[in-house]
Length: 42
Image 1 (cartoon, one colour):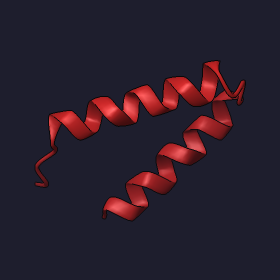
Image 2 (cartoon, one colour; image 1 turned 30 degrees about the horizontal axis):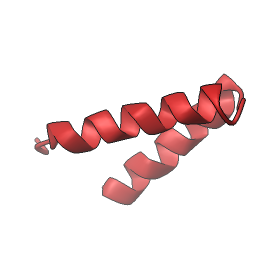
Image 3 (tube, rainbow, N blue to C red; image 1 turned 90 degrees about the horizontal axis):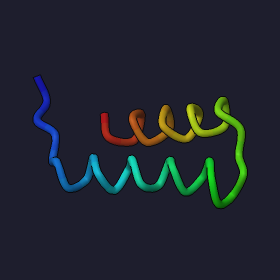
Image 4 (cartoon, rainbow, N blue to C red; image 1 turned 180 degrees about the vertical axis):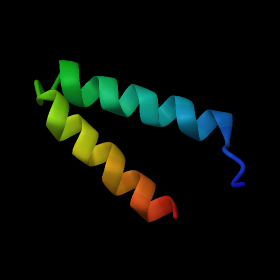
């Protein structure tokens, strides 16, 4: 199992909140960004 860095996870959570609130992106768009970041990490 892969270890996660808690600092990076907090940064990602803040980035997703930024996309949703400040950039006014929809939930599917934020989910797509999360999927892309996950694919990059793997």
